[in-house]
Length: 421
Image (cartoon, rainbow, N blue to C red; front, side, top):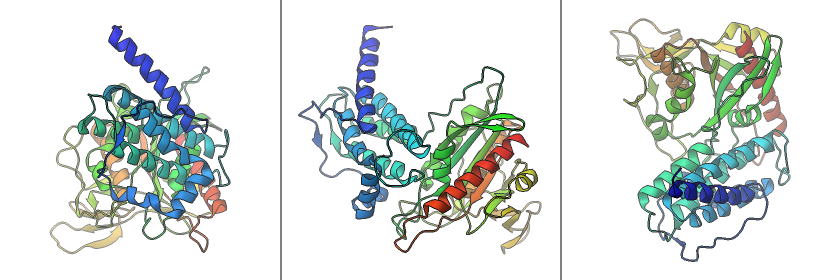
């Protein structure tokens, strides 16, 4: 190992330790870089503008996650080089993800009176950290706007759990291995206090080993953004691909999860190749065929439909639970030779997708992308999508913690049933 590499590794390790202390509620040292300034007009997104809302301040304070932004800024300022800053941002993101997982799973200090099951501290703390990265102006000569973009990407990806999905193989044999994803909160212009039970479920399941009648099932999870552009860039495929590559496949079951319809679970049978007009968290709308990056495995021509390979009948039968479980075969298509959309069960040959069972928003798209990737790789994994019930709120919009706990518990049962059926 070269002297330069050794120095970089040591600097990164020391910086990561300091950031981790800051991200776990312990005192962190203030920045020792007096020349680390602030950009007057940072390049931010709509999501970041919501951070000033009093409801967001309340969520961060009541969870103890209001210390994240300062720790991230200190880490970038003190890095000394853009390369070290990127490495430190990646480790800071991993620390934030693990802190959120630990909080939801009952480990460590809750940091306040916000229910432990809450997914929102991770979402808002990530955005607060991103905003500091967008604002900071380090003095070291290797810093540039390109470096800033790399630091932002490293922090975002790692704080979503995407880089923490390695499976541990048991000493007494291989467990069943499940990869699952949830989503950030959305519809925040309607209710800034919105939670997403799929994200809460992802945090509750990450790293867990569930004992079943057919042996242990290990679950690794991640959380995706509610943004059209990262999906178009291949965020979903690149997160799932390492686990599905022929010869290296290490998952038996891969499930995308999102919030769906009121009062019920839906096991979606069909996924469509169309993205609709509902705005994302940056208020961006699209209306097009789902774009697949050229550099990820894909079929040519692109399929209009993909299908679940989850054992949906067995899942429904195995999990009565608090909420009914529906196997949803309803889609909307334009039949071959027609121009008018038709809603029906199951697509007809040669039809054009308008909406999958999960609609035409990012939930359907996460399922389409992962199952299309499965098919392109000719993987025999059990894959598909679970729509969890809409999480209700009280009169102020605050999510009902008891209902969220019921949704999380039943989702875990469905995932375990999928893995062992």
